[in-house]
Image (cartoon, rainbow, N blue to C red; front, side):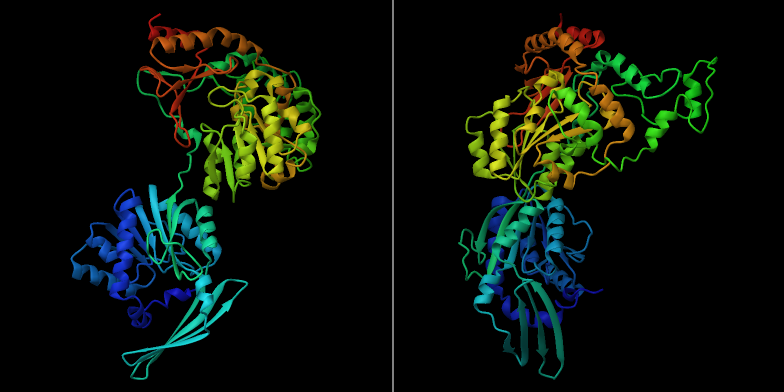
Length: 633
């Protein structure tokens, strides 16, 4: 179906518009654009959305900008091309519907003047998100819109304009509930020809446009009146220009895992942690089967369990001794029967895993946890993705070196990211002032700090008073043992969500099994956005059997007592400034970049502050020896 605006901005429309968009007015608008672009755009590539006949695009190109104009009307684009030819400047032109779904060319700045409001709110938001995606880092948007407050102060259902023998009659009606102005422009030429152009425009108030920009991932730098930098917007401002910058979105943490430079010691992660839980993992995995079958091996070289798929007859035969007497049948073998049952288990009666997990979690953390307060997810990553849906619209408070995943998704949804220090004495006051949608705190954080329980309690209470949620990401807290967790606080405090997983320390990231233990009032909000049945029954059973064994990481902590101080001393010998962090954590933090020969995981602060690198503790004899050789000991 052809949209109204595809047939509106034709030669008939421009026979009137040329009287409104005078050369003097265009010159003023171009001067405003040149000044704004010079002040804020990171480069000279400009995308002119709804460029029309090129009245802004051509002068910008004349001033040295690399301009691409986009418009839905072929006739207008032809006029723009002709104008560029007369001016002797290059101008790329693209015929496209701004509300369509195609990608836009990359640009340093996008301008959209007198071309906003043609669709509904959802379409406008999707268009703004496409603009954000097209902008280079630090990219600028100048968005002009017609202020409905000013229009309604002088609104008339009919109007007439005559020029050079042509009569232009306007017929309008405004729908207060939808915010749309619908009408007709009737053009009667001197020779008697009549053209009828129908329009249907969503008229916005400035706060509504600001809200769409925030939801699309922009930070508004300022709003100007009538193409005048710094001019205040009031009820009589007919045209409002928003100057906004693309909000930078943290990229997923997994993208930091790159192949290290040749000849370096890769200390981004600690695959040798697995040797401290290897025996328990093998025993628990073997126990998932039934009967007297041979144990399915857990590979000693892996950092997570083998693929947890039901064994096939061929794989069982390969794992079993040649003299094995237990037959394999498709109906369920002694080796695979229970595993096959688990692979078929679609736990519709317990879609969030609470019924199965709550008893085990209660024993593990030493506090009563009811099933309705538990949400099982695909690791902490899956739970963070679900929680990001609760972030917008609004503000997310986070730490400077926070894990980027939830923050990136929240920013993409339109949430504003604001840094604070949860350990500061005024942290609760910061929550009350910001009234955020979410507060996200890693416990422990990158720097190895474990926020004290009393601070957690104060933040949770402040979050509840502000109508927010405090999300504690405890993916790494397992290293310090169950007693270090804030999970017991969820039984007595409101507004708290604690995330745990079977990855760090347990070396079972491939299970994709995580848990959110929530305060009673917080669990319904998470269940509204979390996908049900997110953890396979096989993975969930394996994870719960591991947790039922209690604290499995004491051997790892014993090894760290020797290995971690050696790493700290060695890095300092190499000239690094080291933050050791909690003794139970298998990493340290180096200010800036690590010494030559060592590859760590870079951690970028969200706003300001120095970049740091997380360096994992080498635990195996081979990796410790490699580090000693590097240090020269």
